[in-house]
Amino acid sequence: MKMLNVINGPQNVSRIILGCMRMPALNVQQAAEMISTAAELGINFFDHATCYSDGEAETRFGDAFPLTGLKREDVVIQSKCGLHFDRREFDWSKEDILASVDGSLERLKTDHLDVLLLHRPDVLYDPCEVAEAFDKLYREGKVIHFGVSNVPPMQIELLKRYVAQPLIFNQLQLSLDQSQLIDAALYVNNLTTERSVDRDNGLLDYCRLHDITIQAWSPLQIGMFKGCFVDHPDFPELNAVLARLGEKYGVSKTAVAIAWILRHPAKMQAIAGTMDPGHLRNICGAAKVELTHHEWYELYLASGKFLP
Ligand SMILES: NC(=O)c1ccc[n+]([C@@H]2O[C@H](COP(=O)([O-])OP(=O)(O)OC[C@H]3O[C@@H](n4cnc5c(N)ncnc54)[C@H](OP(=O)(O)O)[C@@H]3O)[C@@H](O)[C@H]2O)c1
Image 1: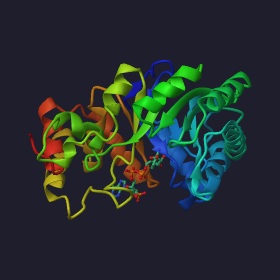
Image 2: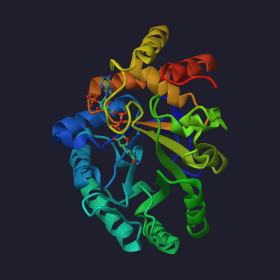
Image 3: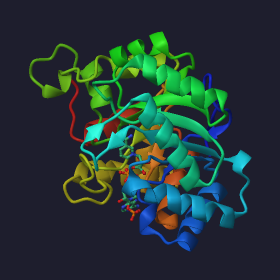
Image 4: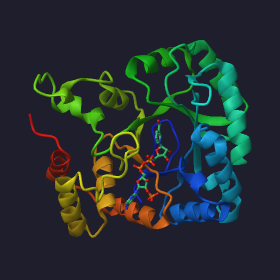
């Protein structure tokens, strides 16, 4: 496994994270096997959110973890708060952050979260309230590190003015299909393509400048949860390059797709969401791959882009 010392954050963490959003599809025994397989493969980082199946993902993990024999201190447990699809609103109020963390700790059966992320911007938020919530959680030992998800540069700037703790992660969508985080910089000032539109105010470079580690969510997905592009008939050119490079490195196509994210010099983590131990084994082949500069571009272009 490729490991990472996160700036201002946890040390020696895996570059591949197991995303637990889909864990409610497993029973407790299967979930324990999934966590154990991840650990065998060198994954020591697990991603959650209060909104994943309304807390059920955290509950399943909390019930399964004791069956694995793993020690709590050997893993990093991250959760996210603020997204309330049930209430049809996002909420970063102090009251909501504190209540969310207490709920997560109870469901995960742990006394602390290693990392708490604010999940998606609540446009009505008051940064003073976030700061008060983070201070209390940190002081009480309930949360060690803090970060954000899907949050653009100026909102991070505003938060940073009030929040005492470093914001160490930004969890963002990135895959060979959904590469908008990267596209705008390549197609800069180009009127011939929508890809030149800067949709996030230079978020990738902002994160690099401010020591914020990017965690790539849905690294194998087409669009928003439209399925996996590996072996998908709509992506013949991409699959041909994935297959050729997979053969070269002796790994699966999914491993090459994940290696494409890990090859970026921003030293991102990739969050794998599979709940199939065999698929996870294949994905972790990415740890053996160091794509060349040319291969990275070859994959990017094969996913439907062009050189401007
Ligand atoms: N911050 C946010 O806003 C946000 C949003 C969404 C997700 N997330 C996080 O990101 C994690 C990953 O998201 P995701 O599950 O959408 O991402 P993903 O890992 O890109 O996609 C997983 C899908 O790919 C399939 N897959 C994997 N390997 C395959 C293979 N070899 N052949 C065929 N299908 C394969 C999986 O099916 P199988 O299970 O059958 O393998 C699953 O349906 C989530 O668990 C969550 O932690 C964060």
